[in-house]
Figure 1 (cartoon, rainbow, N blue to C red):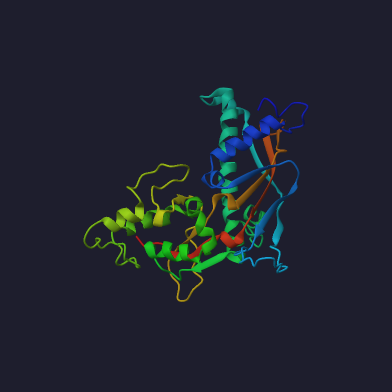
Figure 2 (figure 1 turned 90 degrees about the vertical axis):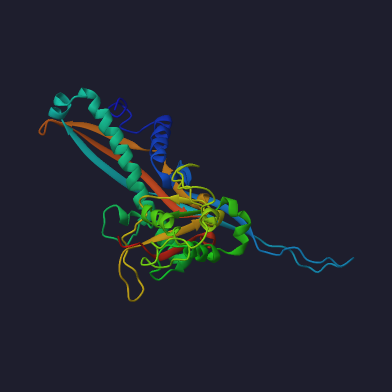
Length: 328
């Protein structure tokens, strides 16, 4: 609050912008598991290069077969949209609360945390066809991957190890050479159902999920790659289906209606990709205005920021839809 009322006109300098972005990223499991680009301009292209498979060929002595390996160059575009956040504080609130004048800074921190939550919601569920004032700003990772990525339709199957097996098998083989870098991503309900399903690793329905696992617990331990524990980084669940860590992203939607027939209940998503495959762009020119309004005897804040997102390689982004959550 000490910088927004001065001659800068509300524009945070580079250091202040970086601190704000750091704070927002620190509040977000999604952004900690994504590639965050601090953009200096409203639009930006990220260059990428790729090659095909089986470029080597048998060489015949003193023979030129005339075949040259091809390298493909492409760009990932980031084009920002402008977002606004407004709030105000009455003079009575500043005078009468236990924190005194420091309440203003406290509320500013709360709004920054909410900014992180709202950005997560937008990056995940964004849809330009929506009527929601925030969600319509851009297309999020779910829509992008369902439109052009590798889609696995579970058609209402409850969570079990077979779900993760099907998702993993949908990933093109060439990317499995980097298996250690891959991550599963899902919402909190799917994570809980995953742990619950370990009671019966062969279960595929909610009715049989509560049955005890037959025989030993070796299968559960192999599936989990250790005991359930929350460590190993932001969103860590301690679950590693087939050796690939499962990361919890709390704001991933889990009340989605199925698009198969007949459909019932609530559904979520399971994603498999490399964390750096999700690209989040935040423009460094962040503005925050503070203005006293005499007629309402209050201080009004207005925050503006520009953000963008994209998926670098849709071929290595698998999304499983119609993953049915257990009915409690």
